[in-house]
Image (cartoon, rainbow, N blue to C red):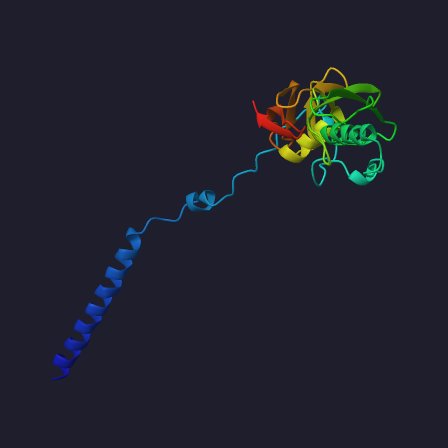
Length: 224
């Protein structure tokens, strides 16, 4: 009985030893750790921002909104008792100022004497920023109320105003319009006689813009 019990214990010991060996063998099949996993989680280096040469552009703060006139900056509008020529001359000044999106405190505005008869045509003159601008009218009906059609053949395009308008549109401080002078003439309903550019300082991208003028002088920029 003693021998039998001993043999049983020995057998258990062998089984246990075999299990330990088997576990050791399983562990031996696993690959040894390497440095590959550590290298895989390294973050890539940040790319440096491109160097941008903005020296060819005109820099200025981006306005909160595109320039436009404040009628409070215009002379007082003549009342209904004023001569018809004075009232239409004031309309002429308002139209030129609206086109320019700014006012000129030194501006003058005159019209020839107007009878106010149907079919009458006259041309008024506004001296704005040192240049003369025509404003013509055709009276279409007269009586208690006088109706007329007006035409502004050309209006003032001012570099500062145009470039500030583009800064708002393109959302950048860096713009340039290839205007021959700081004041050029634009025709309502047509394209401006020049192109503009804007610079994205972050990327260095340059965009070309065409300026379209509405019948009333409002500006709209379109990518070329």
